[in-house]
Image (cartoon, rainbow, N blue to C red):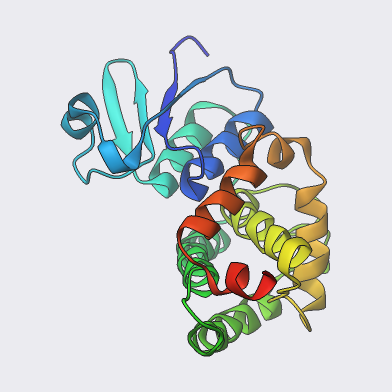
Length: 220
């Protein structure tokens, strides 16, 4: 592909991670620029209509919103990571949209200020996960053997769930055997493992500490 691709993000953004995974799966060269969300540079605010990351720059144009970015990347770099059947493709797009709410739910659980608040958030997240459990294939990935854009969309959620489980014993996938199989398959892929910065885990722990997460409080 001839056009240069640049992603703009901050180092812990799960949404830009989706696009990094897609680019790595397709072996497409790209650059990534990190910004400080607490001190957004003026040039970024001029680029991003929402003031949010990720933003993709290519051919002098800007694309924003992670799902849209991934659709664009998929269209310009065959073979497609979407199913050909229009109805199945529409269902995949719906699950990609759904996965954004999983990331927000996981964030609310992680950054709750006490266990009671976390448990309330986890109840809502568990209901969402029950719907997803029924829609996943027998594995190892969302739709079977072949990697798709739903896998790219959900992988950042699984990575953070795994980190919280290893450090704090908080396993929100408990009882969801298909989701656990799917999580394991995704976390073993190079595209997922290398989709974050080298010190991702340490930075995540620092952010939980700074946010006074209930998980950090109870681990002391």
